[in-house]
Length: 211
Image (cartoon, rainbow, N blue to C red; front, side):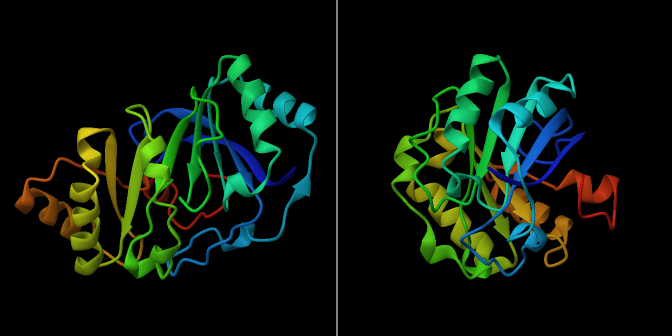
């Protein structure tokens, strides 16, 4: 499979925020979101076998792994890879942009589905059938650029009763929406959602890769 980077860092998002994780960032994405902060992973990277990749993951001596991108489900090799990681008792998060079928992943895997808001320019690409596959251990994320995105995310959350089913993360788009503004909106509306910051951007400001 083609990988852009493998590294150890503090998990910056989701309900697992703050925990040490091994991150595997796969190359390639089928979307071009306006706020994308990983454009460098669209094409570059290196080929690695499943055996060598697992050996690299094992070398960090952690039991939490996130596979991200790009869009990790574009590479079919992710399925045998994650099956082997499940067999080795890793806790695995797969962060996906919601356009690919998530139902093929092992049920032990935590799927973090990024539901694209209108401000991303890609909201019409969502595979809505994925919502039927979500379970209480999975999570969804809305990256919010402005008030329009916020109202849209709120409407979608209510329409699909997401916060009655799983963890719903509302994230301010870094560099576009101030975190305090989003926090104020959530508090004003008494929303049952999780305010989600990309903690790595505040721990290591200005560093894009390897964190």
